[in-house]
Amino acid sequence: AVDALVAAGADIEADGAVIGGGTPLADARGFGQWRAAHRLLGLGARTTLQDAATLGLLDRVTSYVEGARVPQNAHAAPDIEQHDITRHDLTSAFWGACRGGHLATARYLLERGADPDWIGYDGMTPLDIAVEAGAVDVAEWLRGTGARRRRTGTGETRGPA
Image (tube, rainbow, N blue to C red; front, side, top):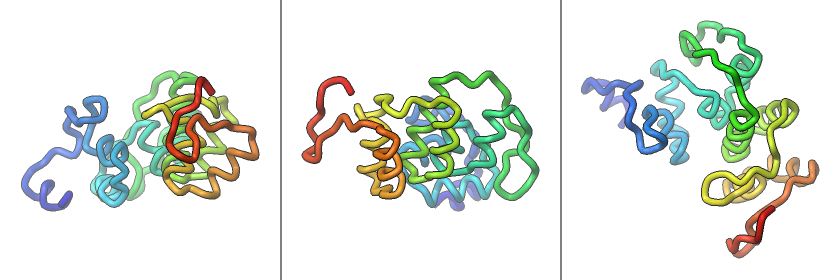
């Protein structure tokens, strides 16, 4: 479907997506459409820190955090827009990495100050979203760090984490 839209002239960088008014890549990763997201990358879509973390693109995440340029290759955006990365940016990206099941990316972001108990989308902590996504290795690692769940096994929400 992505290829057909691009062949018909769709702009893979067009703003206005459902997820924060961003790009088609933001929607693909936000809705867990991993194949579409990776196809958009293959077509040259640029990533944000959130996109890169959720998709497990550790080289790009490192470049965002450390302020380096990403080398040109099939999966790299031509330029990464540089800006100051806040703790909230790190934490939101960490949550995305946990959702995407990307342990190495999650570890990297936690080591740089991400909040392991932040309550993100749909009232879920990184551990909640890792469990929901079936990211067993990430969930086990998070439990080992002392990260907390806000949701019970029945889907009910506990009080503040």
